[in-house]
Amino acid sequence: MDDPAAVRRNAFVAAARELFFANGYAGTTMSSIASKVGGSKTTLWTYFPSKEELFTAVVDDIVRQYGHALTIDLPIDEPVTDVLRRFGSVLMTKLTATPLLSLFRLVVGEAERFPHLAETFYDRGPRRGKARAADWIAEKMVRGEIRIGDPMRAVQQFAGLCQSGLYQFAILGMAEARDLSRLQEEVDAAVDTFYRAWGLDPCG
Image (cartoon, rainbow, N blue to C red; front, side, top):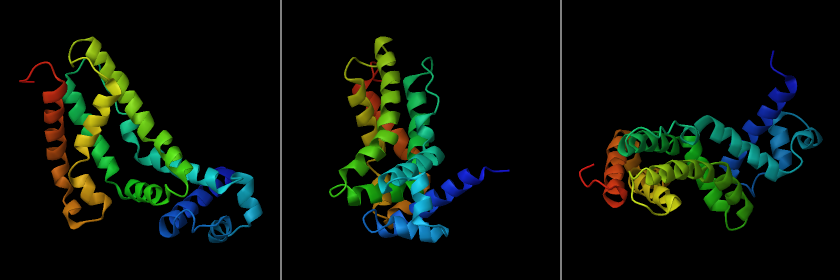
């Protein structure tokens, strides 16, 4: 059987996620979260002493479910373009999932008033994923498969290329984002553009 404490904790996280997305961070109180689950605020505090800790738990839960790009295999012996296509495809499939889009919109909307939320989100997801990809890029540079430069800048540019098309529409909830079949085409174009800038073989 599931641990009752874990079940209770997950219920609080699920309720917080729903209310954060519906009302924003500032518009959600610990009392409203406790009420939604059907417990007291005192009980909620035993699991999460602050709303910020509860928000962190919501971020971690979403990243755990949709952050596959953080753990996707990056084989050092495979060609650069093959690995980037696979990585970009997983990345964009997950970034356009509704929970991650909702989380991103929430963080952006609250970033000015609550900058620590943005820091929490970035540290838990994007920073980890980019650091891991940068390590792979750095090794490819050492092997002479990518021109020497700043590995993190290369990763940031690749991510920017992948997110330059359909993802922009998805963030805004526009109709152009409904056809996700274009994602792979956009990733392929991003890999091609990236390799023209960073690759050693222009025919790669």
